[in-house]
Length: 477
Ligand SMILES: [Zn+2]
Image (cartoon, rainbow, N blue to C red):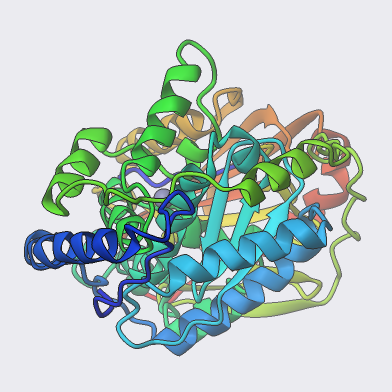
């Protein structure tokens, strides 16, 4: 199940003289062009939108460390194209863009990988690890459109959106942050160790619309500075949106939500830059050759979620303690702790317990989620507990449309406090049905909820461990 929270570089002009310029008029043409550039350049730099990375708890070096770990994991989990010419071409194109990417002096170790996935998508991990689906190459009409997608991804890296998002998630909604107040371990270090895995890395790739708009604007500037038609990125987005009318939108938009007036905002920036350069690069013979090569690659069949995934090892009988500010609990020592994607809770899952939900995001198939929702009321007020629980279940149902209440709330005691036990059924990311045992308790911080998740067919093997975990819960105040 998944949980969603309620809430220039220097003006160094390299002109690739077009072959159509004859020897004789060369000098004149060159002179005229240079003059044109000199006129255009100051205008372009004076008017362009200035962009800076937002507030960030992490250092650029941490971006690199975090991204590297996640990239290693991504390479293990994703089907790569394994096409050296394609990778070399992406590296060459990427490097051309990186030379114009304003990174504030940080030297990121940029890498470019082709993923053998027909879905039109691309993503960049903090620190500069860029993954481009074959689908994005195949959907590009020319080199500048592909450069547009890559410039957009590189802008997320330069603007450090991944760790900025993680910083915001850790702060949550209130001043101190629910996460910090309840879990008390929201340090960069802890996140660094737990987020090192790609499946748990959803938080690094879930951008806000503001971040998307910034990546569009900077991407447009990078395209322009690298000598491409700066309109290419917006043209690509427009094309994707147009083609998907009435169908499922391409995956790109689930990872990169469309900001308001996306194309208009990019057009504005193009105008600020003074329009496309007269000799702007649009396509290349290399691009066309690479696209043909990509189109001919064998198609890797996507795993039906869970189909080939082995069931995790049974929960260990040895338990380890997890200490948060507001409570402690014990969980099987062969499970790992993950912060959830919105950073408002923690999950505990065995190896293989976090599965792909079918769209590339991690979903918990086996394990326990602990989170907190805003709620008010005395901890002994059963009506307040019922109402707050109903709201949380509705939120869970929004994030999990197949979720149904299987057994209505029953009272129980959790560490002596009044609690409510509800059973839900849902579609398991491991295939078949899953059972979710939800236990809720009203606390000063809000409604603390524990969700025990396992496929229905395997639930009996987990029941005991779930009960033992809940029995071990101790509220600290
Ligand atoms: Zn994006």
